[in-house]
Image (tube, rainbow, N blue to C red):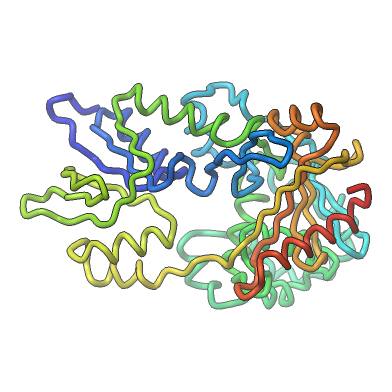
Length: 392
């Protein structure tokens, strides 16, 4: 830990999960931290903001449902700073999947300990049986058992995930359900996912830990449950949190310091952490002509973003059937990738549902065609919701 007189001044640019984690680690070690976030609230992609409904209710909107898998150890460690027992997270009892053809699956009964987790999925899944396992090519499937970074990218990033699954004889029913749901949950069209990404995903969620495939969700909207407490914790550590402050550039100084340029002025620090999404990182580096090497800047400029995704949250005037899952992964429904019934776990949604007799339902469409019109996609998702949950 730095002594106060020796503590460096560090700028953390970006108030999402990465920026909050960096700011927390630095502040806990005695650094003088200033956290810059261009939006009015912390959380980045998991931020939330108030909105008013037609009935006059003020509620919190966000970019949608997020599963906090139990093998997200670093994230859970960050949240424990203000919630040691993780009491603000609540577990969902299953991760159910449903295909448009009627096939269903889930992970509630799958063992948590590898390799029994993978074998248990095969044994219990109606889309993947022992006969399918016997038909697979064991030699071609060996890469599933030996995943190392960066070697996995060097060997398999040039191969499509679909081609790899063809090589090993992965059953089509399981592919259309489990593989497609997982792929799209990572904001990737299944046809664009590489074999390297598939192998790493399989390792993390099946063989890399004994946590299984179930997850937790915040019991209140993201700001109230997670980011407001963490922002307060940073301030208690002496960090300065500047929301609503966009950073336009970071300029190296002759003495090794860095000038951080914002609309409010230029501020000097001894070090900086760029904890930004791809678009923000490219923009900030482009506005910082003296920062980094030419090769590094070229790498940053060449980063790509995931395809667009759409979140549609509906405050319904009628309840969803009590037997509906809090979260349902869907496949084959022409763009609808999952359905969440928020009052099953989120306090704010539950209070609204009790008061009005309605339900709060959220629809996700990942990897949306960039040329698609938002209104048409929203209408299409709502039609698919009514097909799956007719009572809506």
